[in-house]
Image (cartoon, rainbow, N blue to C red; front, top):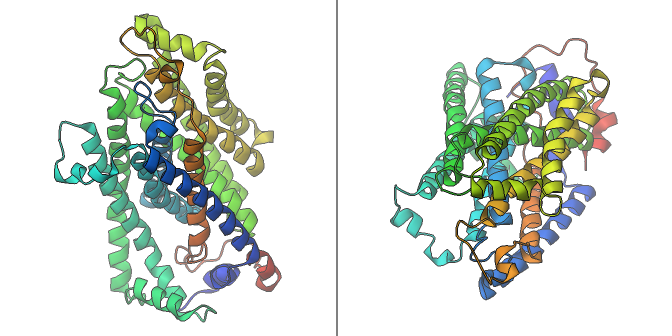
Length: 451
């Protein structure tokens, strides 16, 4: 395929990243694989010895695994919603960031459900979910919704990549033959004819229209697993929009961090500009304010109602000796800090917005933990003469090892994908060059890009 001057400039800058696997990349890959290996060993022990080597017991049957599941599934929705809405609205500044958003969606949707499998005691009965599903069970709804959502997200990403696969296929790249053959197969004969362009455009528009409501529906279904149980802190009518909002909010923070990392690693400052951080910062600030409102409403109504079991949970969350400091961190770092950083013009910089996003994402993970564990530690029946470890949850090294293995897998997927596709989508840019932007000296930047 023929490229215009601007597209050629973008391609030449990123070409070394898909041609070579640099020393730094190998170093990070080995580091991630070591963590994944430790997680594999922890999983082996869990399968052989059972859940007795975890902190989960008869009362607290969920812990880190479910918190991680909700977290990863949540951040995937931001990629879908942001990329889908910006694509539908044809927002011009979306072009450099839309691929990162799509990658977050697909990768997170792969990793999230794995933590559900880690929480299941009988993996040999996993196929029963598909052979004998019960439509009365919200878990069945969740399985169907996530599978549908993953399929739609993968198709949306692939449709966006077809044009770039054709560019890789026709370019003279210094890559192995198997990789060149892979690009040829994935390009599915695309040559840039008017008919092919029209079909891809229509298909992407349809997928973008479908994926946004699908993302909202899926996380609403996930929230109903909690909201439809008569437990303190869970039985809530606003859990659906609360979960959806928190998911998009945390996912926006992950998108900002991913942009910052790729911009530093591959010297993409000319494409991932300051304005992209500021625009996403505005989105994050609005979502943070709405998330803060839902949080206040949720705890205010529970506190004001003064029901016995709700009061017991509220006391745990506000007590510094139990979860008080965690609760304070989740609200200050998850709500106040991002809003303050973006609202003040002097602090509205890419670095500070990224730092605020980092703490916000951690705070939102803590929030998922606080939704699950304190509630399960507040049984509805009185308990006497019960061993403390059966009442109080404390994660073991096995759970932490598998948690960090999941995070390492998340980063490894991003590292590997950046070696097969360009982070800045080449085909998204038309015939016009960016106004006021100098042409980049590709030879000067080549050594920086090859990592």
